[in-house]
Image (cartoon, rainbow, N blue to C red):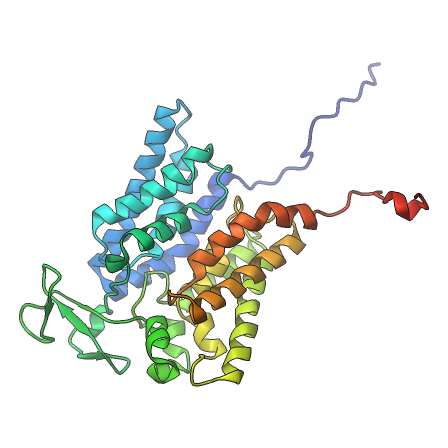
Length: 353
């Protein structure tokens, strides 16, 4: 009788999770927020979403054909990158700019480093930050929800009416093609807390009746999707909780010190990209730490950097920059938070020199 024991390499226990299943699950959880943004902004939001997804898929296929690698668009990673990128961009952004962002996300950030699993930075965030730096005008032109198109103010502040060519025209004139307004974070940065007094309760921010990127409009739908991912164990709670907790503590302290200049906890948690950043950007498997302690440090770092940029930097929002900066710190975080091996004991603990 042959008693030979064959031991294969790890892992020895397998689950039913796969890259494809994970990616498409995350895409599905982002659908409520995406549909809500299309409801709020109409065709401009749909145009951006379809454009970024299509360009990301095309770029992925092109890179894999050029490098003679198998075509893997069915795994959903390119679609997810395109969708997250779309949710961080202003509705109505020109299609060609969407294409540039998709190329930077897929080709420069992902393919150049070897493809899925090799990129050191979040592809969608890299694409978004590149566009913000390269095209600051279009990237900071925020359409108001279609239900507010006939209004001359949005949460008490004047709006800007544009014609088809993008020129400013009189509000209410027949030539109006689009209406834009500053986002809540922009108003806070420019005019202090008095400018956002009507948003202090957080109801409009939580449900989603404001302007901003498609992924900034409804904290409710994003929270539902994020909690679902935690329940299904697609992501863990460590990064989202530490991310938002760090923001809350920072916002609470600064607001207590000077409530005329700094907004409170509710405003900061439900405005901008805090929720989508905490649950869907910072939790990217490839660019976040592997171990629980590292995840807590990473999430807290993202939250703190987000608040520092929001309050004292030149941009009203800091989520994208914060995530990318912490992506760079992941290798060292993993090095110092790696659990000790079972049975490990340092030489000095044994009584050695």
